[in-house]
Image (cartoon, rainbow, N blue to C red; front, side, top):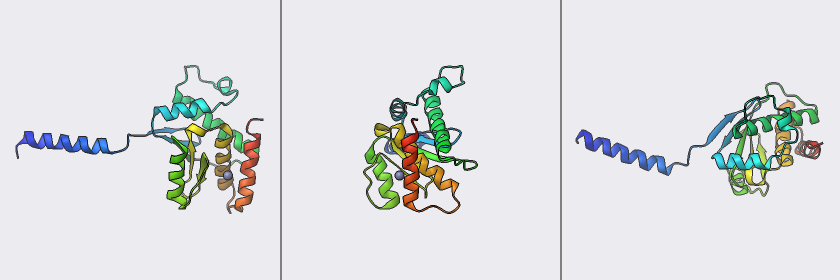
Length: 178
Ligand SMILES: [Zn+2]
């Protein structure tokens, strides 16, 4: 085989592989979370739906904020507020926040992990240490509720019963906008 032909073949194979793979996702690191997101549009959608009062006022950054700065800042602020509401501060808190395009995508993750259906805009899976939220349906209450599960899960050495877990997250959901 000539060098030229080998090169062309390699190029064709590369094109086939790269177009058949899902588009590269974004990954951002905040103080508390590693955020993963399929694309810029989904990140923008989450940012638009997450109205965090006093967020800009509380920001100490002088330079104009990017969407990435806003989203990571909001997730950190919500995570901090959730810990304050619960009065639980697990040391070295870190988790993954997976931003999904739709509830269907959230459901796909749920089915993969739990082998059953979920009709909710978000959930937390302790097995992957990940919060999954639909950007299209995100509200601060939904995000805070799921982060509530993260904080409770990491605070107790022995996981409390599911009912208690749920009550604590509902408490967070109720008070996140106080
Ligand atoms: Zn819950």
